[in-house]
Length: 326
Image (tube, rainbow, N blue to C red; front, side, top):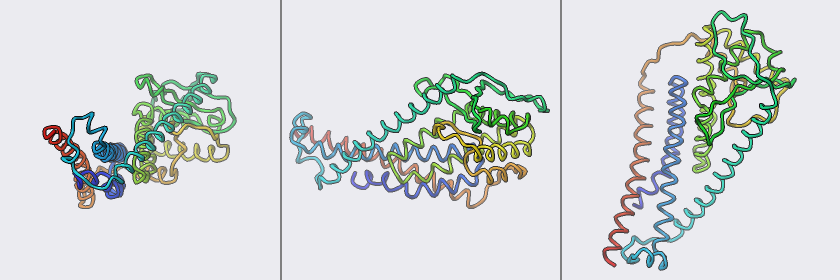
């Protein structure tokens, strides 16, 4: 158990650079799943390891051993400091998770209240050559340029969200560009990208080494929505132009209060996204580097999960042995 319980706490330092490297060689959709899956797996294993360390220390306390009918001298010994540190980290992580969740809920409620005060609208697609499914759209009377995908309540994940856009953003774009913008934000809602962002946000609270995954995940989610908008409109050049003009408009007159879980077409490394849209898509080819990164990341995550399971089984066996001896 001593080795297995520490492995999930150390392996994220190896898994993070592997996931980032692999994501660069994958399509945006697959890259987003790899990054979010890596964060969720590593964070879950971290929580299990901290819980096992704390539990192993608590079981050696006389009052806990008496309640569990254990023979304390049959439990594995060792310094008590790791158990105390693990318990303190779990309490701190729980407090941070609650604060993060409360902040996210508050931000989304504030954004929904502002959106409810807006008016339903359409994105003026009269100049589009291809029909685009716009979905629910709310227009805010605000000269500052902004547009984002506002998800439904986190407690009711089946409730659809809405696309929110300001009049300042609509005035900055042409009719076809407006349709691209709304299609981009609708793609965020359809794929529930806010859940990817929320899962990674919680994961970084449990293990700070996972924080470098947030920026590439945000980029891949925007690229995912870019490709969906380009496919919906049938024009990659138009999509690139719409993304660039939306970013310029938002930079000139930004709105400061957009929720973190509300993706926006004008966020992230826009020049890099525009360059990717202007590059003709190529069928993915397997390379030696991509295959090696995939195998290494798979092995790292499998070892992380196996170590957490092995440490759990070892603690269970120790508890059963201590109960039998008693």
